[in-house]
Length: 284
Length: 292
Picture 1 (cartoon, one colour):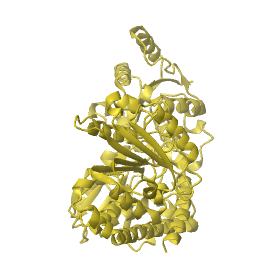
Picture 2 (cartoon, chains in turn brown, red):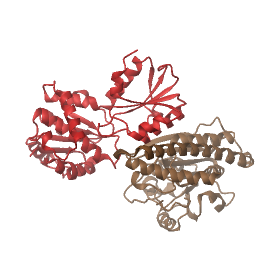
Picture 3 (cartoon, one colour):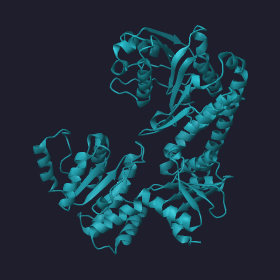
Picture 4 (cartoon, helix red, strand yellow):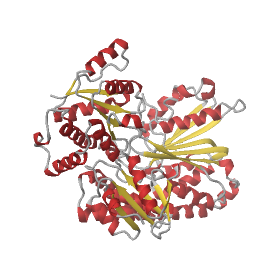
């Protein structure tokens, strides 16, 4: 979702990824509320529309008719495909915007709030300098009862490494989000974090719910600089720690050589090294 | 030629296909009937069981979708046909089955290295069985493509099993040596014998470490990772890096990584040059340290 050329939006017709299924299950529960007439959903880094591809199998026509879907991605071609999928879903509204994640909030009218924001399979592609601001903008864009659902992998599969990508582990993301909430004055709130075991790699998810953060919109706006700055500092601290571990591993491999079981690891470390070096250079 | 009956669920088709393509042709085994029809009726199943009776060995891939596979395994047990079970999905194997088969846990392998790991582990196992029990018409000497180190390893395994009379017992011994849970018990017992107070990792940290220890050799909190690997696969530098990361997450004073295999040179180098207290131990090291 920045400028990682190796990145590719996945779309498989026959398969529903579990993280997308989880997001749809949450939406399913929320839109089934008979008192709810409208549901604003922002799908950040929507790609080719993988998450909405199976919407008709998970939501009734009446439930879909409540949804105002907003897709956002940097890739124009991907968005065109997602738009084609949305057109056949009989949604109340669908609209798409193109742009970088760091500036997504500028693309929507000030008064527009979302009941659900999804950010799946993307955090590893976000420029770490934009991570704090993306979190902040997402929180500010949530409606009073809105929630943010984030999912990503803890590492990339060996054959799908992306030059410049930084995968985050669950505990690292948890530290970033705790710092963020603390700076926002909501340190008593413990958002939900989950760890997902897949066949090749592990994943994690986080859910942040706006009404659990007892801070007014105005106060959030006033605290923007402090929240973003504290969160950025935590991001940098974690990046430095990851970089140091990576550098020392490569140093050992340089001195002693890689044995057969370390061939794939060496490649991953080299990818990590470059991504972390690049990220730290940008956060200076 | 040794005849193999392959029993797999639909879920493990891919692994089964790769086994057929790579392992079996390489080791000179012939497959009696690779499963083609996953929704076979009773007559097909009877035919499969008849075919199994001609097998010298049954290879089972056990996963969470193994109802029919377990049935075929039960049949093989009843007919006293040797069984090798490749365990997936971290399934716990019932004790009574351990008496009838050799188990290789391949759950922790990733897709990329599945084959390499399974190949080496299975080769070792087959050879051990062959040498002692004459299940197969070939021996260590008949495998010229193996290097000296591999042959030494096989000989070592055979020597370890020399005192066992029955094939089932030998296979069980092999299974127990490889079992991850068994290694965890062994490590726990050792830590306790050294005066440590041992707790299992909470579910939320199960990927970071296996055990937490207090009061071990006068240290504060210690995180312990256990790697039960085939003797062909060593613990890598990345795994020692993960241990150091787990120490940081847990605010632990030191970390211990124990394996039934060995460590790569880079892994040892990483630990030696770390400013954190990291100890790398093999099961041989545990045996060498007496209880306090």
